[in-house]
Length: 145
Image 1 (cartoon, rainbow, N blue to C red):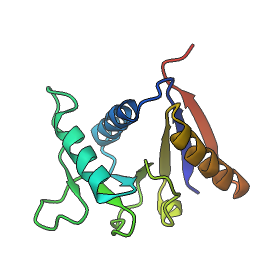
Image 2 (image 1 turned 180 degrees about the horizontal axis):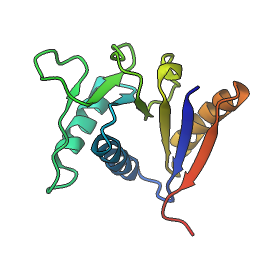
Image 3 (image 1 turned 60 degrees about the horizontal axis):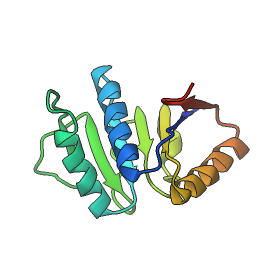
């Protein structure tokens, strides 16, 4: 059964959410995990693609957009609604407003929550969806006492 973590940040900006997602992806990849990041649109995927290239100057995270068949295989892939979800079953980081229909095939799913009303509303819906179905859920408050 998929284990679900909600990472709750005190910040309200979407940039903080994106930066934390990059750190989360970096950590998972450093542990040898395969990661799929789900967003809503191709524009969001390209923004995250750029962020993963430069979020930490001393670090390089090989990754690709899932639709980029010319790019070499990578442990980290980015997809958006209506696009393929890859083949692995390891880690899914969901930054989408929706719960991806394929979420349950993953061992771990991470939701990143910031104090933005749109993000809060979406992640509350996600929480209720997972809870109703009996998935194990953990809350991880980041940067709070």
